[in-house]
Image (tube, rainbow, N blue to C red):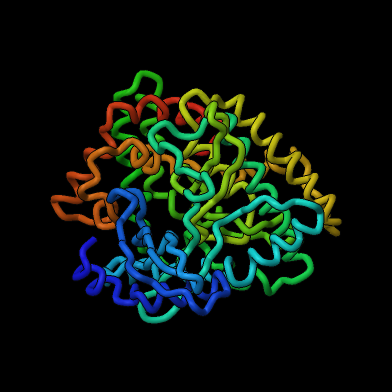
Length: 412
C-alpha cells in the first residue's frame, strides 16, 4: 500500500504512533521506528464490517539491535454509508467492551481454574474516536492461520472451536451472575424491530435460496415453497431468536461465529491443536444456541453430518458443564437436553445466516463483495447476488441442510 493511500485513508498510522505502541508493549522508551509497511492481508469479500491491515515495523532498540514486528490493525469503514450502517448496531462499542471489560475478567476466571489457553488476540491499542480502530497482535507469529473458508470446518476443527466457545460461554455466564454490569454493552439485539437495515439481506437471501431449492431433487416443491413463504416471517422469527429470557441460561455469544472468524494452530502433520476466535464485534448476551446454530449450520464442512451435530453438541455441553462446575456457578447448570431444546427454539438463527453465508464461503469473484453488494439494488449488486446464489457447489451443502431444517420445523 503506497504512502499516499495510507495518509489519505489511515492518517493515524505514522512512525510516532507505531513507535508509541512498541514502547508501551516492550516497556522500552529508547525504541525508534526506522520504517514500516502496510498491506491489506485479506482479499475483498473476506471481511464485511471493517478494513483489516497488516503493518510490518522495522525498528531499533536502545542497544541498537535491528528488529521487526508486525501488527494487525482493524479499522472501521471509512465509507460513510457502511460506517453509518454498522454504527446503528454499536459494533465498535461492543468489541471495545469485550477487550476492555469482558475478556480480562473471563481470562482471570479461567486462569483461576488452571485454564491458560487464549480465547482472543491481544489488543495493543483501542481507539474509539476519530477513525475507530484496534491494533492487535499478529496471530500468524504464534502459528495461527485462517481456515480455508470454502471447505469449512471438519469435525475435529469444530470440536476445538466448541471447546473454546464453551469456556467463553461458561465464564461469561459466571461473570454475569456476580457482576451484571459486565454485560451492559451486550444487550443490543442483532435483529430487532427497531433497526431494519439488514432486513433485506435476510429476506432476499431466503427467497434466493428458495428459488435455487426449487430445482433440487429433494427440496423442490414443499421445502422450496416454505423458504419463499418465509420471507414474510423471517424477521419476526429472528427478533424472537434475539429476545433474551432472563430466567434462562444466558451467555455472551460471540455473535459472528463462523469459519472466517476462526484461526487454527496445527501440527506439521496437519492435526489442529488449538483455535482462537477473532472479531467479537456483534456479541449478544442471550441463548448459547445462537452461537451453536450459527457455527454448525454455516461453517461445517460437507462431510459433517446431522448425526455429528449431536455429537458436537454433546462435546460442547461436556466442556460447558466442566467449566461451570469448576467455577462454582451458583445457578442451575443446563443439561444436554436443555441445550438441545435451545437449539430447537433458536435454530432459526442458522437458517437465517446459512442461506447467504454458505455461498459467501464459496464465492471466488469478490469484486463486489461488500455490504452494498449484499444489500443494494444497483445492477452490480443484483448481479453479485445472482452469482452468489447460483454457485454450482451451493447445492452440495444447502440441500442437505434444508431437509434437516424441515425435519426440525425451522421452516414452518
